[in-house]
Length: 116
Image (cartoon, rainbow, N blue to C red):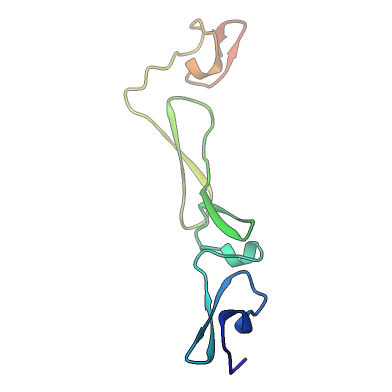
């Protein structure tokens, strides 16, 4: 609309705009981080999971973990794939050492209370 008396005259029906009437002219200004669908939220970062919930974008960091306390996972920003790096000076248990959970073992596997 070109002519208005108040902001209600400028309502474009879009939840992602702020509708105002300035000097009898409508202005529909885009709201930051507002979305209609997931494509509106694409931050072009392959290491985030992009979602649109209740017209709000959320870009959550991708989790890279193999559940081994001695291995650090990280996301490659070039391709979005998870990579893993062995942590130096990590005190994990080698094969045949006693364990209660797989997180204690270097292999990440604990069977019958022994690291395998």
